[in-house]
Length: 169
Image (cartoon, rainbow, N blue to C red; front, side, top):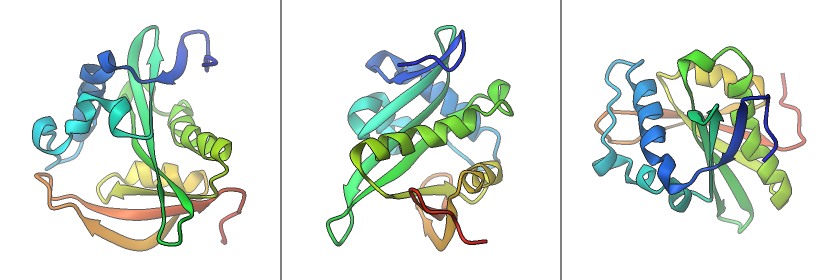
């Protein structure tokens, strides 16, 4: 994988990354009142991230995991492949440097490799900075929401993007 800078690179997650990924996401959850991380009951996929997603990548700086992004590829009701961007998290100390944008765009590049045009993502209604980041790279809100019925009482907004298509103003 090509490094993003001298010390920062994005690479496929390996089993040993699980504790660092869990710490990263737990720290992000702590930024929002009411967000709870319960790995065993709600995020067991983080114990084997590469097996629980189509692809799962970590962003590391000098060997330390400082971000992650993942995706899931699935067929829609018409049988067309869709790529869902998932698990986009970045350490507070790395925000504001364009790395969050790269974490969103990397699964898009993977979609391009696979010839997938339709991308979706869901984002907790509390994660307003994430919504702005998705919108900045061309995702639009679908108007859909979904309640996860989890310990955090999460409700998420739906976002979509068609690769190669500019969003309407």
